[in-house]
Length: 207
Image (cartoon, rainbow, N blue to C red):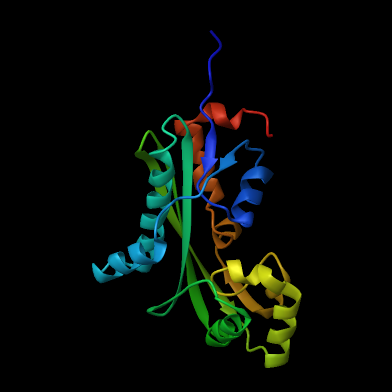
């Protein structure tokens, strides 16, 4: 009987995360994690959980939510939190909200925390969190609006209201941290974990 190789599932619909995995030559499916992220985040914050730990906890929750449904698969969960001092920012609800967020970040440094987890059979096999520090320059309102025009609706799916892989890079002064972490998936630690827990998936031909 032919062996069935367990598949790899990304518990996210993020275009950036999908592109990173595809770029690494991985064959994978995607699935939505049916969790209430904001409710879980509120619970974690109420219990005193730090911002970086919240990103990690949400990544684990996503991985487990899908793993419970697809027990034979290896599941990647990922999440990202953005902290401006003690303030936690989220994806903008519309263009005006995006403009307000960018104004809050203008001329200041903030931290992006990206959590990632690998699960199988309803258990976490590995998890980790990486942090990057980013500084926006003192851009003008006209520069901000030009970038928002260029980004369009893509910006609404981005925490912090920017995309470093897009026109938003024009608003930045400095970036300290791993590029993959900034895009929301610490790819190098994840690949190291896969070499340990699921090396056969790295040799699968990409779809």
